[in-house]
Image 1 (cartoon, rainbow, N blue to C red):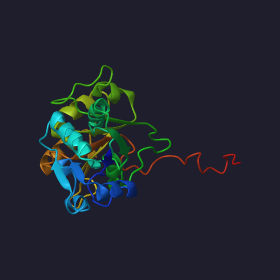
Image 2 (image 1 turned 90 degrees about the horizontal axis):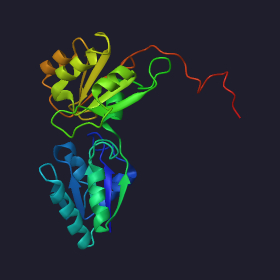
Image 3 (image 1 turned 30 degrees about the vertical axis):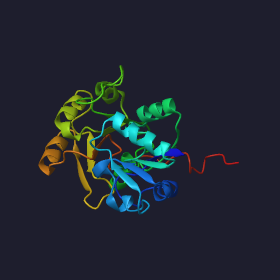
Image 4 (image 1 turned 90 degrees about the vertical axis):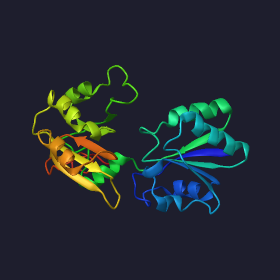
Length: 247
């Protein structure tokens, strides 16, 4: 039997891969991340599947469910919001499964930052404007960041910053960024990307915190910082250049 860590996408039920949907539809057990996974997607589970909301569960309780399912001979679809490669806590779960000798695999999904960029109608790597993207998070009330990965470090390095799990402390995050970047640096906050109630806020480091506060955005949001946000500037890439030598 196999535990499949399935990227459930950023929120819209149809933003899941064919492989991921197949795993959901054929697994007798489904573990999912509470309100982050839409009911329309959970409805694709088999009619009598065991559905377990992990929102208030500890790691030990989650692993116990996976071990029990394996002992019963059941495949598991373990749904992760967005893509399992980013801020999903998959690593700690798979370490436990390896210790228990349980087979597992990862099915990638659409990450939240990609859905946010789509909502902004923006490319995050615009030639001549920005070619580097850093995915990071706020360290408050969470696992400490490793040495050398503070927000100060990334802000000073340049490039586009994509901040997860940070919107609750938007004012504090902006204050840190302002120490390294100009007040007119473009910023966008996308809440509930791809959902029916998606909300897009645009501004700069000078005013985005006030916009977020006024809109009452507290969670399920991505902050994107950098000149690529909403720009029409940039140069044409070498990829499609007439001067490029093509075999």
